[in-house]
Image 1: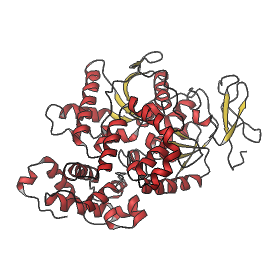
Image 2: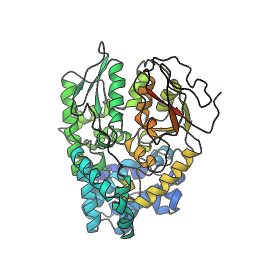
Image 3: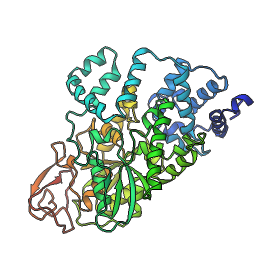
Image 4: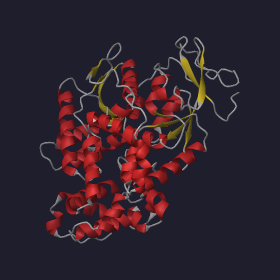
Amino acid sequence: MQTSFTLVQLADPNIAEADRILRTCVHCGFCTATCPTYVLLGDELDSPRGRIYLIKDMLEHDRPATADVVKHIDRCLSCLACMTTCPSGVHYMHLVDHARAHIETTYSRPPIDRWLRAVLARVLPDNRLLRWALRAARVGRPFASLFAALGLRPVAAMLRLAPAKLPARSAEEGRRLFPADGPRKGRVALLTGCVAPVVAPAISAAAIRLLTRHGIEVVVAEEGCCGSLTHHMGREGEALAAARRQVDAWSAEITGEGLDAILVTASGCGTTLKDYGFMLRSDRAYADKAARISALAADISEYLNALTLTSERRPPPLTVAYHSACSLQHGQKVGRVPKELLSKFGFVVKDVPEGHLCCGSAGTYNILQPELARRLRDRKVGNIEKLKPDVIAAGNIGCMTQIAAGTTIPVVHTVELIDWATGGPAPQALMGPSARGSRVREPGALGRGVDGKAASAAAGAGDPGRDVPVALSDRTES
């Protein structure tokens, strides 16, 4: 692609990077086949190639974003499926991130839109405010249809996404250090995230149990949000400030007792952490430190794959529909490892048809673009339900929340299943009323199939008398 930026424009490192990315594109159009919005809408401007042309024109002429440009950029999920497909290596992520920052500084959104985005940017990263907001949302949920009828679809979407009941606070909340069981074999920082501690504290609890049980000391050193949410809303100043806070916190641990890795259970956050080096590349005070943090960042499945995990017992061989979060498979290029870990411990793992297409969560997308998000969710759930799984596993809290809103099949984090398989408790989602199955109480047993035969081949040391989930599916176990 030919560009015509002036030398003055190219003096800006962000424009210089945009120019490099644009020149990589060869107009081939392969990206259109894997772009969720193009698949749904069939509009060239809602494809990566179309958006690239819009961004190029906007940046080259150094003009404010127009309403039409904003509409098509806002519709982008940043799922990055286009980057997996692109044969030319176009780094669309950095290009669209820059476009969003340009939109944020040059375009005046309607008042209700500005208010909503400001609320999301303030509330979601703050655990205390998020708890209060979700409690209020419980009261407002019956009025979601009214808000939708009034044209306030994002508000209706927020109410519908709010859990009917918040889980109890984790007993570990507020703790900063979790010593290894036995001799220490490693030391890691764990990013607990913004939303997960409020709506799914079981994820971090499972990760901490699993790691400490295998001799890994865990430290929670983060200082608020990682910046991912605001970064993808174009609020670059807030995002970079959050990134600097995290870099400072983790750098202190590195120079102290050291860190082998910085682990993430929310793959959306993980993609941003791995990009800190780029985000802060022009900050002389932080560039080197940020690059070091990015080098240490890893999805928890990557780290677990390098450990020798011991299995104290085998759970029932449940059929798991593995949803590969976009931020994991496209953003971090981690696709095979989580499935191999689950298979290693006896779970029957099935790939979801059209697994490259986004579920519609995408950070705040399912609130800001509720209609498109709903269509993508329904398509994803339809593909999952074709597999008739006992449970859905994913590595991102946003995906888990989005998918769970459209199905009765229990949705758990991958690390919860691995924790269970290596000595931890069964995931609560498999014990609750939404689980597709029944429970048995049998001392010393891990569960029996619906025909009375053993559902697990391993003779684990089960907790006597503990409720054990037994999935009921349309299959006949033999």
